[in-house]
Length: 181
Length: 174
Image (cartoon, rainbow over all chains, first blue to last red; front, side, top):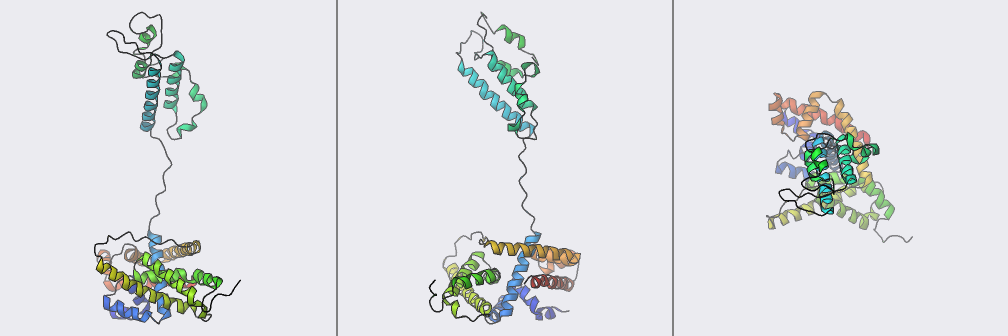
């Protein structure tokens, strides 16, 4: 079958018009037929619908949004940020009394420190595949003995000890360098 | 309910015409105008005139009348658009997004897509590959022939056979 045979085929002509394979003269001549040839108009409409459907079939669907999952690094950064805010809040709550040769630390109550440490523990133990807000309540009530506390947190939280005359409180000295309570 | 003015189409018939022909008219207008916004504009103009003068159309001949009307609207809009482009060559082209369609048209379109998908699966692999490359990837037939190491006539024949089978799907849907 030659190219001329193809071009004589009416359906093929319709496809060539719809797909813009015709040159300007051919297209103009074809369109003049459209003016009073209903069958040709409908053939053009059908071919356009067919081509649009083929494109729709072949176009890959939009990638569905993956479910939100926190990476472990992301969870840790959130934890650090939350604890840092807590630590600053605790630090600002009490009077700051700079000691000579010592860094100034905020003063916090024992219960506040325990709450901070508990929260740290619970956040570390949370399954990173699930929403943080669905943490089991029991995890939030862990006692301090089950918590591994980083040194920088210990430095940010000072247990008040009114009887300590100089330097850091005795309890702080005991905890420094400790990996766990 | 008062009768519509002479020549004007009543609301029910107008609605029937729209549901029955809008989808195909839009496809026809797009193939002439190559622009979804202009095609939609022409479609709206067509049905506005159908409302104003469609009451005089004999029952059974509305299809022919609508296509002729749509074609004239398309030519008019194309002439105007070409004049505007000549006068404002620096107008930035906006994205040619499809105009929103009615729920019925969208449902009909989705059904057609599903049928075409099924029909494509039934095509011989070599025909389907030519169709995919030509229509979806917009390769020329010569490019397809070169990449598949086939004679041009073979590529054209495969395309023609595939189109014939796919057209049968459309006809069966009517």
